[in-house]
Image 1 (cartoon, rainbow, N blue to C red):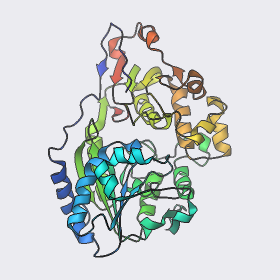
Image 2: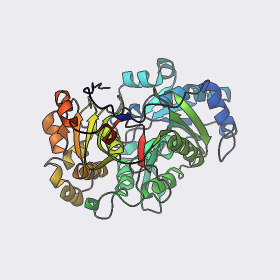
Image 3: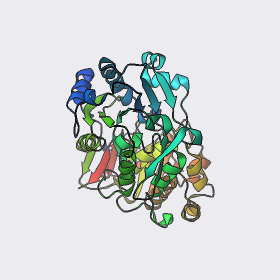
Image 4: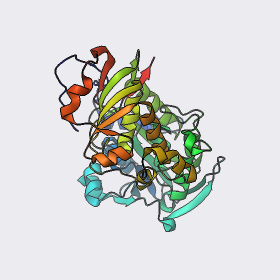
Length: 412
């Protein structure tokens, strides 16, 4: 996380500093959730006497929460006859970059990595995929063959706000998590209007599931897996530790966790502000610009039209998406025409950034070079110029958000 000292002067209000308390006994909470799930019977009733069990976990961009609830979930499976000999863990990263062995060991822990078979899903490996059907939206569902052939699928991960799918987690461990490239592209294309240059589709909003075409396509596709699917969903705290856990049916468990997330992480504001000073919240939330964009979008909701957002986001791994970089190859002004001509994986992020930078001024403190930021329509935030940028702004017209990726401002 980048720390920036603010100049002496008016002290702005700070929002989103207080996180909910972590669970006192994570293992006991996981066990209770698995035995008293939502929308289905206990997990023990679903564990088959033979056949493989596929456990899906999110990748490193989603933080440490999955690992915190994974160990007690694996212990539960083992106690009920599905030990490491029958269980395979899949890194359900969709089209995110492949994690190294060392990264997986750090994420999941040496004990899990050393005992269980762990597979990194590759969305571009056609030989590893099998078709399971087509959604009513027309998305041809190509999923990881080994997962499809498993006797039980257990998804383990955290929910989060998501700018076009409504909420992350749950069904996203399947679509896009263990889906093929064609499937992911078809699903994500629904986030933009018929003419992509017109921006995000109706219903594709942060915190919206009902009427969201991307979510509805995801849940329909994920439900096509032939094996029973059981979800273990968590809401993360300040350090990634779980503060809430739900489990059960693929839709019910996800919705309950999502509502808890909304309850704990919505920031009600009486008005927008002229200046918002924010941080993405540190790794992995600002591992690259693609991920940091989510924090930028959240924080931008608190800024009045024509206002200023100062965002600290390190982005040590650069842009994080070739398709996003390509959309901005000729600069911000050319993005709508490029997206109209050819939709690519992260064109919805491109249009989101285009819309934000057209409404407000955004300056970013980052490891990214100034010319890269400039192509995206961002200015460079230099610490030494902070005082001049804030000069004359009343304290009541400023707001700081230290963990912008986690909290969602809502103007009431």
